[in-house]
Amino acid sequence: MSPGAHSETLRKLVHVSMAGFALLLRWIPWQAAAGLAAAAIVFNIALIPRLGDRLIRPGERERVLRSGVVLYAVAVLVLILIFRHRLEIAAGAWGILAFGDGASTLLGGTLAGPRLPWNPKKSWIGSAAFLLFGSVGGAALMSWVGARYDAPAQGLPIWVLASVAALAGAIVESLPLALDDNLSVPLFCGALLRSLQLLDPRVWTDSAALLRHDFFLGLALTGLFALAARGTGSVSWSGVAGGMLVGTVIATFAGPSGFAVLALFFILGSVATRLGYARKARRGIAQEDRGARGWVHALANGSVPAYLAFLGASTSPELAAMLRVAFVASVATAACDTLGSEAGPLGKGEPLLITRMRRVPAGTPGAVSLLGTGAGAAGALLIGMLAAALGTIPAWTIGVVVAAALLGALLESVLGATLEPMGLVDSETINFVNTAAGGLAALALMRWAGGGTP
Image (tube, rainbow, N blue to C red; front, side, top):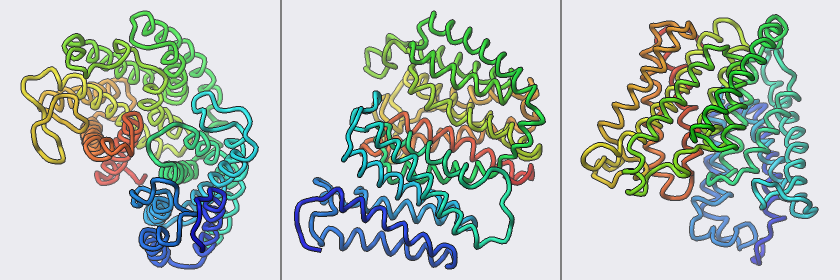
């Protein structure tokens, strides 16, 4: 390749063509696939910067480890390792990344058109191209690699799975996140594809009347609760909209008791935010807008619990019971993180940076304190106790909920201390990740305890 000025078109054509290697996943063992992905990482780090500037964006040469060409290969390796026994998932997510993201840049940049209101750097045409080509590419690769398995397809058709995942991927790609979309899109789509495979559409038919009843009840409850929260200044109008979306989904699929669990988290978080607000404001670490949270906060903390509630109402009874625990654990993780962040700075002395165990100013990302950890654990315990009292989860799983919440909060502190200062993730992304980690930790603990197989 001859040296020259950077070409985004050439870069995206290579980006798309690399998905051709996913065809090999139909035949080769996962160990060999992982080895090839690891070799691609080494190649991209060592040799691509020496081939000229055509594939390297301005500024990437100085931070090649964080460049898209390297993170693309890293994402493929992570997909193969996580879904080593279900390589069709890795192939589907790879296809959505390659074809969807590639088409989004090529067509969105060429045809221009109206920009997205939440991200002027992206266009509606680009997002539509992502959805169309990501759906087709993801479904094709998923179907091709899935032929290596003898088990018949169950649940939703592959094209439906790929289309839903591509739509979610297009939304993630359109958001102005700090996390590179070469990582966020495939990992998110892979997790979504695998979880969607668990759905049993017959459950919706059998429980249609109950779901319809809970939807209208949840819509009314959420609307009243959101307006009351707006009246107290706890949320902005965008927070009302985001909270109603999350609350209605949870009330529909987890029932009024699930909504009560979410409401308790919101109340605890709002009280903790207001507690000592003036003191926190003087130190420059108070929640902005006098603690009024917007739609970003609602989705960052509530989208994972809402999805777990949906999954719990859409699968077999055994798996549904585990997913209800995961749902409560994800809410408890959000409560643990919020209470820890809001109560911790009120204590005496400076907290510890978790990765270096040295004193840092209050409010530093990744800092932990005894008061904050205790407040977070207490919040998680209250969430678990309410869920058990309402019959959402068995009483014996309260310990699972608290342990999972603390693990999720620990991950939040580690990410805050490492990736956030580097600008690789922002606080909203971390909140999403730690609620997901809390839910996954609960599933793992349930499996370890003999509660079933997630």
